[in-house]
Length: 149
Image 1 (cartoon, rainbow, N blue to C red):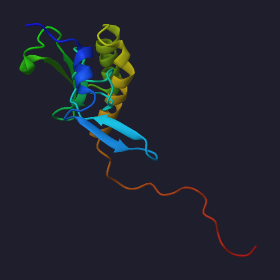
Image 2 (image 1 turned 90 degrees about the vertical axis):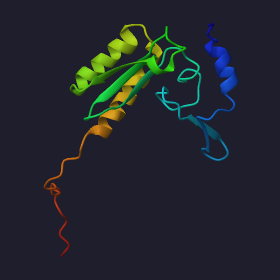
Image 3 (image 1 turned 30 degrees about the vertical axis):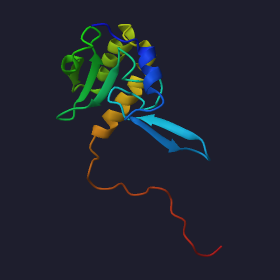
Image 4 (image 1 turned 60 degrees about the vertical axis):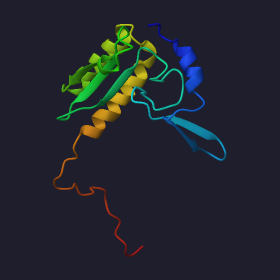
């Protein structure tokens, strides 16, 4: 079975699809977002599209405060159930950054998505952290005493 080129898929999908979200920005300017699962920035563009590109990167939260890095396999495009290669990471943040940069940028998989993948990793990792509940710190700034001048 022959696969369809990504540029053709993008030309068909870019005007209207079920993942497209159109919102108004400043004034009458329209901003377009995308709800695709393999879109790192959730922006409606060919570069970040998970539908039009054969090589995509996904970073999401997993079970037990882990981060899941998923890349698509280029050879199994006609089998959607086995298209993703997932790896779960429970390491400290610096090791996760190194793993993502090695997988995305240094392996020449999609070096143009390296900064977007690191931004998504940072946001997902920040969302998984639990706020510490304890005694609140008091304000140590000198308070102004109102009185005589």
